[in-house]
Length: 263
Image 1 (spheres, rainbow, N blue to C red):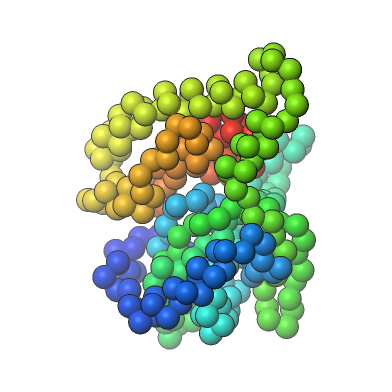
Image 2: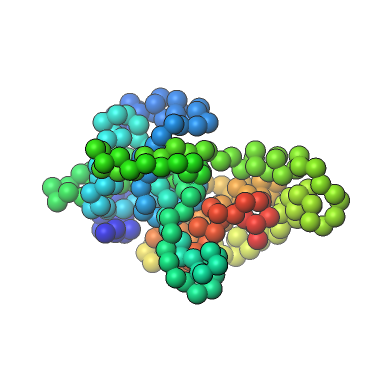
């Protein structure tokens, strides 16, 4: 089970182990320089979008094993993906008939040294970094978890590919779709401010929105519509959820174009 209430778990930024973070910093940078990692441990937990921070107590034996293994090997990252309920036609709308694992997820980085409890659970603070698409996966029975070969996804490169495609000048061309996505991203600026002010009135705990804003950082410019879309998704559907915009995170991860994300 999970408990997303960081207050109950006693996890806060001040609990970070400076030695732990310093010793792994170079290793993290080294891994980020690689576009592709042959295999990473993959867990099914929650659907996160880049920049989101999850503070959680987990007692899933598989996740605990993955965390222990990654820390011992000085690789404080692992892959995380969620699930989505789909209808008879494979759509996320309509009559829900089954729950499927997403092919797209995020690489999460441990921000603090994990705290293992005597009961077998782990207190974890992770931040969603790079998006990826699962190319293949294999159950590692010896280790007790799933390893996945992934392809990392980059919003800027995806948008550049959209712009470089040969297309007509009609309204459905890739170039026009990018232009409309940028315009729509710009229109979100006022709405973002209004949402933040409104959300402060419905916080589940004092300071929740301030902490959320610190976690996700500054809003990306409208000229980066995909990144702005992911940022807005992290804002309006945070962890723990506030009961609004539910289901938006898996839709954002599954979207194929900037326009689909910003819409």
